[in-house]
Image 1 (spheres, rainbow, N blue to C red):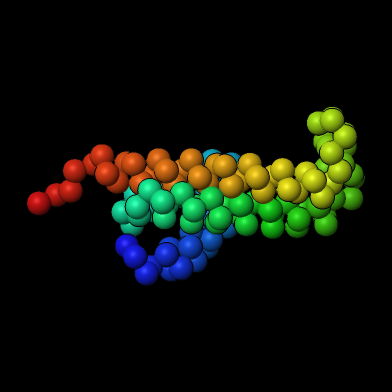
Image 2 (cartoon, helix red, strand yellow):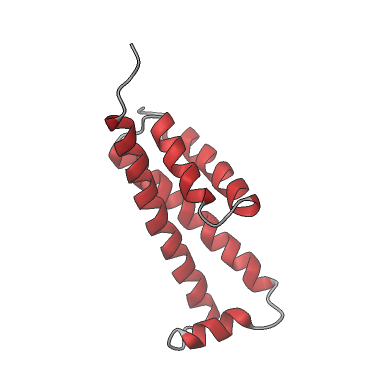
Length: 119
């Protein structure tokens, strides 16, 4: 799978964005697992590509929602979490996305190794 990492990253960014906007909250992680498994990514590739893809998408979505937040809900949620500011909440959201992507990519890569190939 060497050399196709950029293509996989682009596919993952597109798929995660679409599944994140139109699916349930767990759809981006499920998409990452499936793509990592179907593309038979190595563990290292699956981990860094999926972590980067989900981190970027989650952080950008959080920034978009921060710009549309007329009620101050993000700031109020940050206050409930110990006084986090709104930009720090975006960072925490991106970090959660990165961790979710890392674990999803790892699972997909492991499933690809565990499922026997048809002969």
